[in-house]
Length: 207
Image (cartoon, rainbow, N blue to C red):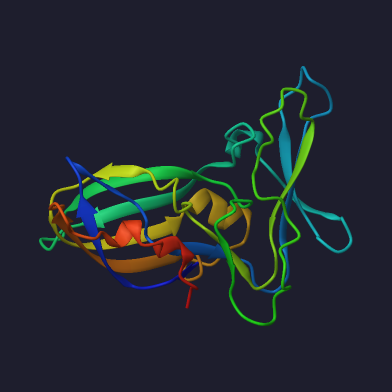
């Protein structure tokens, strides 16, 4: 995982913030590619990781890891810990590798992504999709206009963003590569204030 910035200020509207964290899931050492398919319309879809060059199946994931055609169920966890060391909010989220909010990390990656910009076409007769992240590219954990809300009070927090253990184990991702820590200030929104989360945090190039 990579982050555009490790220190953020987010505005709170009502009792919640939008999780525009500028965090990304990156592919290194080769393309990350999943094949999602069902043999017929009466069967559930299955998912396998494949070698993007050869098409060879590297591993088959449990079918219950799929959130339908929307992505990988409970792939990510976001937690907010206050200055007293108490976790005040924690939630799991689905992740779509094909989200349009993606970035090339460095010049080693292809200039244009080869993968679709969505995980599902929304068509009822869909039988298969390719999900993936190009080598040296990264996909935002939450798209700029799709950042989900989370209820937290104003204050200063240490925020953990991690790939959940089931996926780290299944995909052979190290604990260090599968987690980030951010320092986030949550402030109450005031009229006329400009929020970090409205300024394209997800569009900043990760570093």
